[in-house]
Length: 101
Image (cartoon, rainbow, N blue to C red; front, top):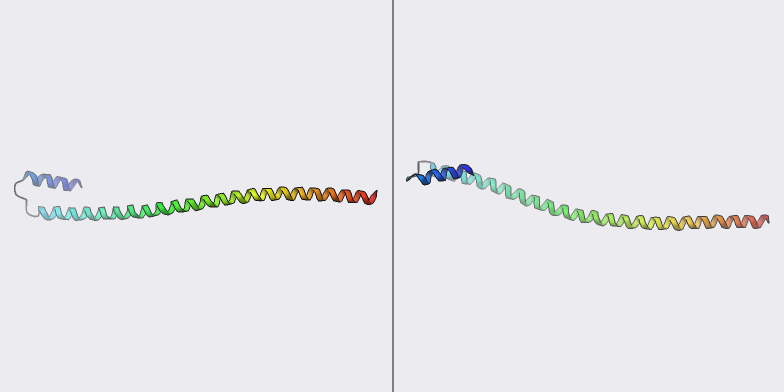
């Protein structure tokens, strides 16, 4: 881009454009436009990737919440089962005691 500015500044100081100067400026403009188009495509691609990442982050967050809920339910079920096993053992002890008694 600096090259283009320098060429334009030089051509302004001169009354008549030098031969080939216009084509040189045009070539630089075309080159810079190509670079700009590549950068724009890259920016669009990165925007799409960023959007996809945001969607995936929401999915991960939902799955994390699901896992936390399942862990909570599992812990509750484990507690209920442990209580039931304890009560069953106590009942068996009571039955065994009644048989011996």
